[in-house]
Image (cartoon, rainbow, N blue to C red; front, side, top):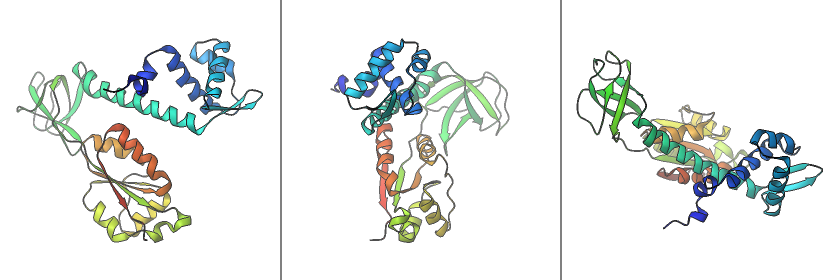
Length: 269
């Protein structure tokens, strides 16, 4: 059985006190080093005295360091604590959106054939997109409007589980430029990985150039980490070419959301 005292989601939701500690750490991180406790108090709806006491506790715990005269900075430990709890909240929110809210909301799908308002349709996922068709599927709903084949259509009263698998993320590590950068990437190994995935992202210019050298443009560069995760949740296998200094944090991110992944070290020995 999971120890609730160690569960980030339980910790952050169990009381207003813990939620306030989380919010104050975020505010300190956003405004450091010049932290205005009165502004934080007004924003969070607590007293300045309460903010002062919370910050004192966070300093004692090593999550915040005091520079004197109202100057504070979030420590590495504090940053890791915030990220851990933020990821837990994001996972919970994803569960609410995917598993709870869809029971009462209207989903958007692509009509696979002409549909009419009131039709009962099956909803399924293909290549990361939702489709509606007049045949039985593991998830069934009701069409809210007329639509021709290929048009977007609303589907309400969705019941069942949309039949799809989550994609696998291939994480390909490349060295930073001071350790050789794209010049130290095994190009054939890179080509072998990206040949089998529809979505390729890059983190770091070294990764971008390595892909260019291999004759493949990255599908995603800015925001590639989260875009790859979102694509994998929609059933697409992905590859993220990422510089080594960002590599470990991204693996932790994948583990926090429960996605399957494979690691490929592309660095020339």
